[in-house]
Image (cartoon, rainbow, N blue to C red; front, top):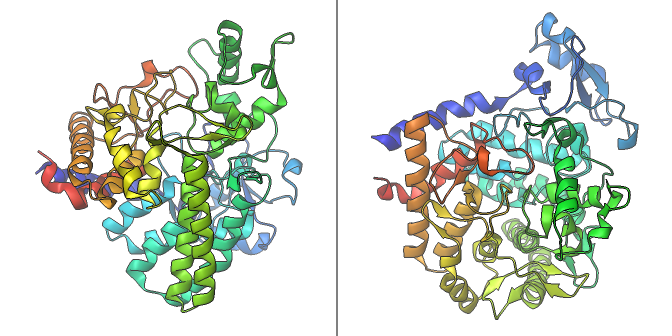
Length: 497
């Protein structure tokens, strides 16, 4: 039966995608940056750790030849003092997405965790969560990924959901209690400036780094050798744009992208949605928006912290976090709910208006339970906007970006399915799950693997020719697709032909 073949493939793939001390040389290698030949790969250790102790630990897992191919350094206290980029050390095993993504990613890890739990990979699931907690403790936040060039940006906050998902299996209250300081630290990363917009009380994506993203300069080249940033300049030279004030991001006289462009570009990458025109071309105007996804997730974090304090018997703190969630729910509905459109839309606090760009993040408030039954009904009435032969479109716009139509992604599929089921729309949720599983398994049967994203209009994994900006490859593996497939099969195996 095909579903058993799928399950066997995914079970084996967890091993392929796992990185531990034994794989450190493999983990350190990074195709996204230029690496001088015959030079060691750099591993950076947290300043809170003892470098010599870590070296001794690694020598137990690596051969002398392998140790010669890496160089272990203590991470400077200031990001600006990093002279050459490298891998950030994590003490335990973790699962990477696959392909060019040979490091641990922030929000990918949630969907990977769901798959590990479905597959009863208990130890690896525990370690996946523990490595993210380690990042908060030692690197200040959960990173976009554990490379030094990503120290200045995070990814959508899903850590509290991961902690509770794992706790539901382990029932380990001592461990649960131990996570609280780190969960709260990560929460405050998002709810103070510069991530906080004081006028609305809502949060935004806002990366802390400056200048071009190093991995983009080197690895996101097209057939003519042009970088993503060169293609952006071509676009600005060619097209009139009224989505935002282009002069903020592009100096026409000098034909140069501005410092603010790179700030917006990095912030777009912090959102996990790289790239889409959701916030205007290349989403660089994201820094002026309170997004539906981020604030729905922060509502979930507040609810999760309330739940954890309730489990631990602290009614007072449980109520404080519940009150925060209620306040955020009110602010989200005030600023992000568009009654006329019947959708949740991102709010531009610079202009005081919502951007009428239909995006699948409108399902997040259903997934997290902050929408009212009436709002859920309106979204369901608009389901045809996103309906595709292979599940749901990421957006309703074709832009040449991978996070727009005609593309669909496993995480957004699962969020839509779970959100619809939460409000009792089982037929609609089942329909999306059925379409996505049918497409993904058909492509798996033909090619023998799952991939990062799909063209859900053509029900195809062959997407590269349609993607004009960012990287155009479709990575094989693939961590979060595997996790979502297992999660959907757990509830919808009867829908697979």
